[in-house]
Image (cartoon, rainbow, N blue to C red; front, side, top):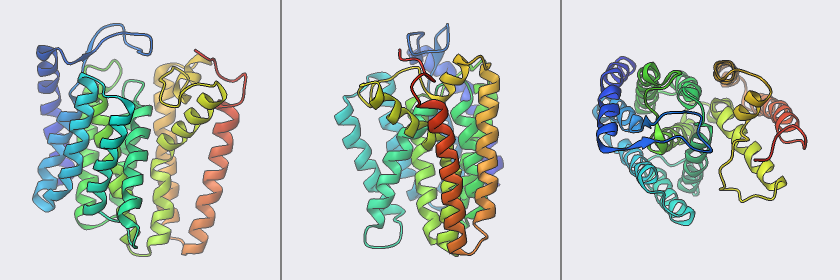
Length: 312
């Protein structure tokens, strides 16, 4: 039911959010790091939040607190970008709140959740560079979590999946609305909370090992960006047009092909992760390490080796 409710509300709320964004002037204008030629409204993230909030509020409304804080930080970033230091401090606060609500097991459980929030919040934001890319990739992630989690966490995963599916109807190329930082921060925080929850799910080591692959594409792109920017002598927080998806387009891929390939690869990794979650814990860790090692090697050789990307 959470899946259906999230989908229906998103389908209705997204165009309303787009009209409101245009009326208020909350739009993404064309620029050096932009792919669009005309202004595109933001506030897609607000619509996604409303869509997932309805089913989540029925089961565990406290989960909406860190999600709402992430949405608020993203809206502030969309309207008037705060300094990197300020943004990082607020991200840490959001992570601390999430760690209080959904702590991983152990004395450092809250800290682990907080670190996951900061990492995935930024990872999803970095992959949000093509129409439908971030929403499509994280839709696969949400479905993965929905299949391995239970209870309130499963409701959140299904609500997130439904709201993203509804949002994609309006965000597919050519996008009529964007997630904005508000949406990418919201989604990243939700995924981090879901990943933290896997520590308590059944044979947690196997489930968590497999669930790591549910967020592999955003994390891999972020890792590539960090290595690439360091090699170019650039600040890690300086934006550019050299992400994995940008490089594929430079190599002659169409944007549709890039989006489809990234979503399909994330879907494949979700399938592998689900299979891993049913293995004995020791075997699950080994298989996950092998998959991550293979994927990491392919990405780093293809996208960080000098000569394979253009400095801009």
